Length: 230
Image (cartoon, rainbow, N blue to C red):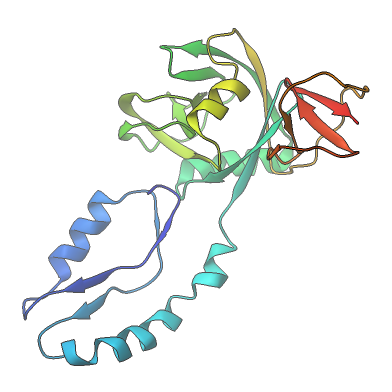
């Protein structure tokens, strides 16, 4: 749920919902709560449709979703991944640093579940016990960034989540188990073209925004981690 925008509807017969709301806020961490919870109970149950209809506009989903912060992760100067940043001071501090300049670091495999490397500077920690999923971006000891392609449980800080990639795709892009990679973090998804060549060989092609292209036409694509032109 990290990085998601959440609205809460709670039903009960007559007892209050403050304890349920408090438990939800305690258990569902690193999310943006869209507004007050809607309470449906025995006295207003028959009007639930009207209650929901009047409650939804107070949340302003469309407006608030546009404020979610994005970060772009470029691997070895080639394919760029899009990530949604978590709502905490650690991610905010990283974003402020990236406003000054992109951060490039070298990452290596660790434990057959992540690529990790030093950022060269320290950021505030918001440590919690986390069981990671593929695509999770984690800050470790305030100065190491981990890109996960498998699961692990530890106490560290959530930074964000890579969007729209399966575990198999992440392993391929991050070159899991194949040695070090160069990672560039930025707030822009526009990257310079490091190499351009004609390529008629077989292989999987991706667009510059990381989407797999089944039948590429003329244009610039990513193949085997490099930019190519057809």
